[in-house]
Image (cartoon, rainbow, N blue to C red; front, side, top):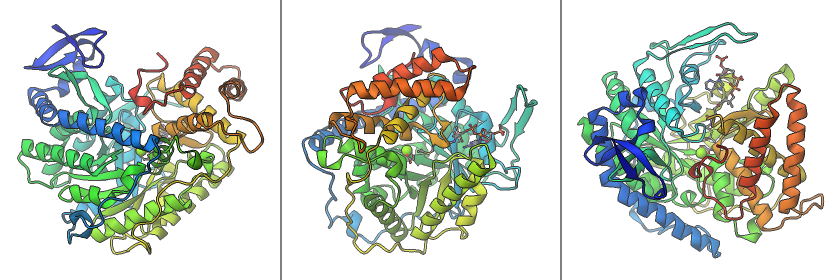
Length: 549
Ligand SMILES: CC(=O)SCCNC(=O)CCNC(=O)[C@H](O)C(C)(C)COP(=O)(O)OP(=O)(O)OC[C@H]1O[C@@H](n2cnc3c(N)ncnc32)[C@H](O)[C@@H]1OP(=O)(O)O
Ligand SMILES: O=CC(=O)O
Ligand SMILES: [Mg+2]
């Protein structure tokens, strides 16, 4: 054992264990389950990826800061060179393999939950099954080490078809056993963590490895050979890119992974989320960088709304209206979806729709109302030309399937007259006390889950995850910064927001009844209030040290 000073965490030297020359793991993270994954081959791949790619990752993250400083000073994101090879060249992505030609419905969920992974991959009681399951290390999962390690094990068990789980009996519900049917499973897709996240439990030459590279490396080594053996494409999702040079960086990582297993370039196929405002201006450039590995692009609407607010947070003329009022029908959102579809289909890639973030609710009336909303959303996506869509809950698979009657719509070109439409968010729309209350309630409830290691919750009949929480946080910050007066006349000041936090906590106590753990919810409220009232805007919640513990 040795001690290691982690760059950027220099104040605390923490005991580590050496895994290989220059590669250390924090002692507390060296659990038996982690050790099973950190084989000599895996450690050597992590070291190789890190040494090859980490300096450039740091530069790319610095470049984000430089661009943000320009946006803060009044610039706005713009389209790039309209004469570049990416835009004018006659190129296509590598032909899509057979098992990427039908992705009508993709269900998503946190990869660390064995039960949910099995449910995502399996047929529902009413006989529906998604085409694909996106096993998520990003928006729906808190990236604690335990969750990451459990997540990798679940991907391996899913690839092998051996994953099992027993849920203990609890009041009103008997014990329930879960297992996969290897002959009837959705296709596996893995969403790795974004470029911004370190995995600070593993250090290469004293620096934390990239969380995304760790997710890729471990799932690739431990699960991809099994998939390749069964003639299945190893499929990944990559979130939150902001620039085509970041796509180039991920593409280099894919090449290194393929070289490690000595498989041809293009064995791994990735779908990138276009879910930041800067990336929406570079869709074609991003796809061009990925053309050997691209499966498609996805309209990640929730992080996109977060990024719209965050990127232009200082722009007084673009202060965003209530989050509930920002749908795909707002001009800049519709343009971004249509542009993505047009580019993908022109270049031979799939164009995936996004998440209708509803949960089914508990009573029949709510279930019908929620189903109607999902159906309307999915029909809209199909009409726009999307090849498939996301659902957050198995209950909606059948509804979404019906909205996507064809295997794909790769032959459909979107009806976009102008190749360079206006993609800048507009500030018009309601700014209401109900909107502020929604943001505050989401903050409290989400942090209550977060402190219990949960990254996705059902709340007020909506699915709330890291992306939607960030919208609520960024919107509150923006309204505070610009001293917005709400439509009902209330001025958004720290004191006013603080009082809304207190009121909403009281309301939550009433709603949850006498058994509610008041201390835990009060702690969550305080953490959320402190987070929402921070003066300096923090780039991502997930970059902060845990705000609760
Ligand atoms: C912005 C974005 O990035 S979107 C993508 C990221 N977000 C997501 O992936 C959201 C995933 N969804 C979820 O996590 C869940 O649906 C939640 C947390 C919102 C709600 O979960 P619950 O409160 O457990 O819902 P509910 O009680 O209705 O679940 C009923 C059953 O469906 C299962 N279930 C619910 N959602 C999912 C899911 N997404 N995948 C698999 N199973 C699911 C539950 O595990 C439960 O199973 P069981 O009957 O065997 O016990
Ligand atoms: O990741 C998806 C999103 O909408 O954010
Ligand atoms: Mg997202």
